[in-house]
Image 1 (tube, rainbow, N blue to C red):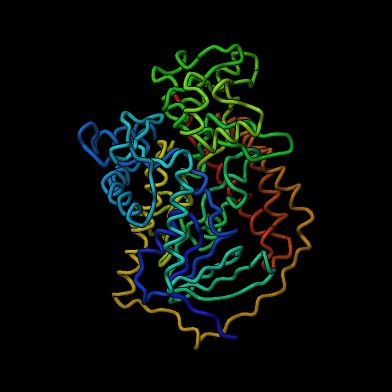
Image 2: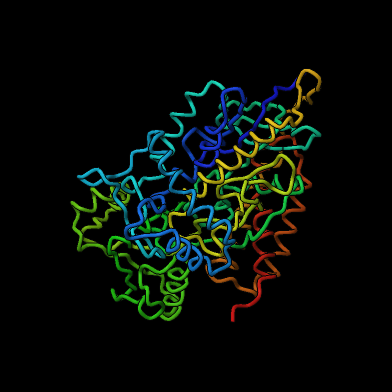
Length: 500
């Protein structure tokens, strides 16, 4: 059989993938894969907002630059930071043109909130559902484009390099159908690795597939141990793994952190109090917990704002609390750190290019160097826009300069084997074990003594997975990705010098 051919394959339906797709002209054929239903992504869960300096009367690029570098422990790539703060404002204005409806004041000016690590109010938002609003608008525009083919519920299982592009093998998990095709260029926008941890704010699709697949092609993977733990996630209910995030913006609007005794404690750890960066607050909570004998009862209190105001400003968070029997206008909300974001990933340059020709990455799966060792709140959404755009524009320059493209009529495609799920029975227990190993050795503070044994066990699990029949089994692909991420995280912490 002959394989279908596309100019560009985009893997991922979050903000980076969607915005990249919209940059291409109508004569470029795009295939956009989403692992689940359209609209499900890490981007869609982003609550707080999008950071950009739109006016300079009380803010500046220099201040945003300094805040980003400070939050990242000065381990950031200054060129990447400069690119974000200079190009982010234009990207924000562009998505407004595309239909994103941010909250505005009565005079029409955009509302801006404050979040931890920011020295100025520069975060635009749509209540507490900013990511969902951006995703809504971008999907509407993508569906209008005749040159963009969308395949939902589709897992990329294999990607192989060709002289003029890539061949890909996929499985549609809704219809249990496998497929093959070719593409001249690939943009990986597959999100983070949250499912490698026992508790995460990430969606179920965040298994790090793009990172593992890029590695098999020879792409450089960098700083995968730079994992961010958000300090204010609501503990999961019984038999749940997913933690509901209580946005950074709640602290920006005046919420205080309390320990089990109802006392504020951040003054003992950082002069910025509740508006310190996420890593600082997460570490402070763990230290305070240890001081109190391991007690994990911590609370976020914003009752002084009242229920009516909170329900209007934070409707999704207010509803989530109500679903747990809490009125956040009258009661403090229980919180604790939880895995949230990946700062490392597939190493890319300022155009989103990886070390593999024709392979690009954007969004959370990419390591741009922007965030350093800790992401400043609300810098992820503009990063997805800026690097998604750069990747697309760089690909267009290559196409227009005459890069050879695959021709399906002259290439015989391989028939995909039936999906072999004989390995699926052992996968849940292996996932649980990997998650337990990471949770115990790499949660907020890395346990250097526990890492060698954890790493040895992860390597054993990886060997077991490699021995499993592999005929496009999407569940096996995901567990392999989780195991690969765990290996890289553990190795990164093992090799990281001890903090002075």
